[in-house]
Image 1 (cartoon, rainbow, N blue to C red):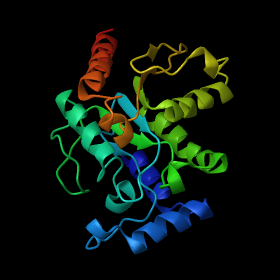
Image 2: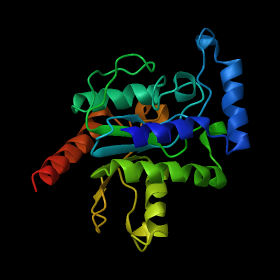
Image 3: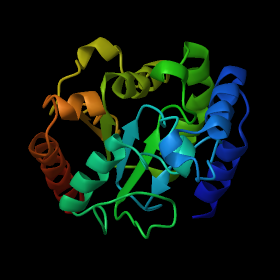
Image 4: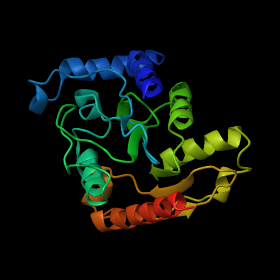
Length: 231
């Protein structure tokens, strides 16, 4: 889809946030020892997936030595290993692994984005940086017109609900509390919102989030999309 390709090129060229530009480029120059032979991406990371997707998966930000290295969202770190495995098991991906941009991974009916397109220091973006990235997310919603959104983590969920509140689509984000496995009908023809813990290494290594837990959420998503398409 041409509009999506054009948007992704705008994202890749973005230099709106000096702190993030400096951090992502420093990480790309200095590299992690394990990846010293890699040619790091070192630029904003665009969305990835099926341009006709009915499911939009929203994460937080690329990792300095994950997406910032590989150039693909949720690729090259433990979070991505977990996410694409469960997407594969649920039928949204053609393979369970995601290691680099040309590894053959194809998504079906799913498109993955991050609320922030550059790796932030200490994984903590500033409010101004999140605001600079938001128009890209708004444009993705406009182009893709998803029927379901899966927010990975409380920050991603608040980004989406905050956008809806500013648009006057919902009265209060507080009416939709974060809880793994929750789903919300937001009304007014909006996508149904599904919520899950973020597949961070901390969450998956401690057992706060397991593959079985995420599989249940994705089963709920699939049931909704099947029922929605039959209407």
